[in-house]
Length: 227
Image 1 (cartoon, rainbow, N blue to C red):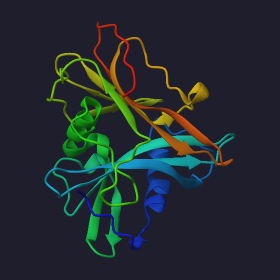
Image 2 (image 1 turned 45 degrees about the vertical axis):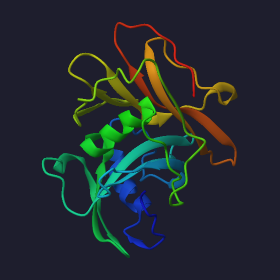
Image 3 (image 1 turned 90 degrees about the horizontal axis):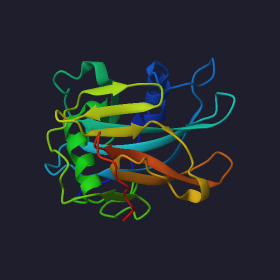
Image 4 (image 1 turned 180 degrees about the horizontal axis):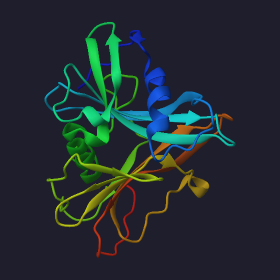
């Protein structure tokens, strides 16, 4: 299990994201820099214990209305070869030293563990407490781990999210712009074969819930229920 260190970071995670988010095609904040607040998220464990994996939810109030974004980030103790384009920034950690923070959709360690979460092979962990499952994160998967394991970390961004495609058709769709589900009950697309859903805090103090990730198998219409 990953150990959570409550120490100072320079710059902070929100400071890194303030500079990085406006460069994303799915960001649509105000004309100035983002006004960010941490709103939720969860972590996953790297089986090798080397890479930090965090799914952050941040809210931005710089636009005409508050917007919540899902930002998967990996933290490494050295640069990731070939991933210069996905570097969010570097920070100094009070215990671990210099850390390289990457957009996790381009990091093969995060992609593999995200698929394992969808399939139920690993469990989401609390964002701020060591060795504590996050019970608010739900997932589902149709079939017996039938999703391919050869997803690459080649991510395609658009105005709503990020798509990770496998060679034979299935895809993981990350909802970067989060939409609260009616009655906090996320509705899956017809073609979905799996999902991850979670909750986050809105700026007005209310609690929202919605889809984070959808596993889709193009051409196969199916409905999945939460677990």
